Amino acid sequence: MPATSPSIGPVRRAAAATGLVLALVTTGGGCANGGQTTSGSAGPTATATAAPVSEVADPSRVSVPRLGIRAGLRPLLLGTNGELKPPPYGIAGWYAAGPEPGEKGAAVIAGHLDSAHGPDVFARLGEARRGDRIVVRLDDGGSRTFTITGVGRFAQERFPTRRVYGATPGAELRLITCGGAYDRRAGRYLDNVVVFATAAG
Image (cartoon, rainbow, N blue to C red):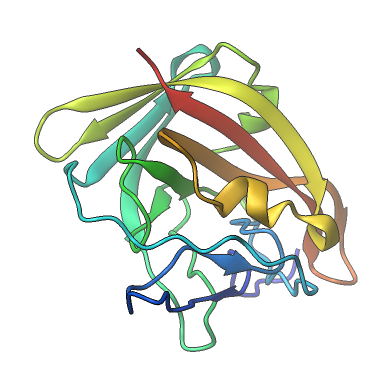
């Protein structure tokens, strides 16, 4: 694989009538791919929702116990071109301008599928299934548990932006990585794997 810089797909920010920063409008699917730049074609527009007032401590770790997935977390910010900058290899990241996991809305965590050196933190994410638990540890020592309600693999050109980033009535979580075939000419995976989960209890 070429040693190009990874991306998580271009992201634009919008402003609500309230003037607050809103949820994502993404193209290219929001994937932390295996060491490649995601070019991304234009995708649908998400229903924008105002960024919430923080009620939950920042997340520090994420795990999917059945799959043996365990990863530290760092905040993901936007780059100069509006793209969501990916986490380093060996760690996952959460979109810091959106809800923290456990707050109302769809919190988003992205991680790499692989790298030039082998599998990365979300290598097994595509094996997730309905009913699996996701545990997010928080900086204050607490945690939030989510139950997986669905797993999808979507072509990046048809990424379901509204479903992933749109407003939700309660606390939800999305885990995102790459999937499908790897296009060596384009230097990217063609699909995204998205895990959908809701707050347990």
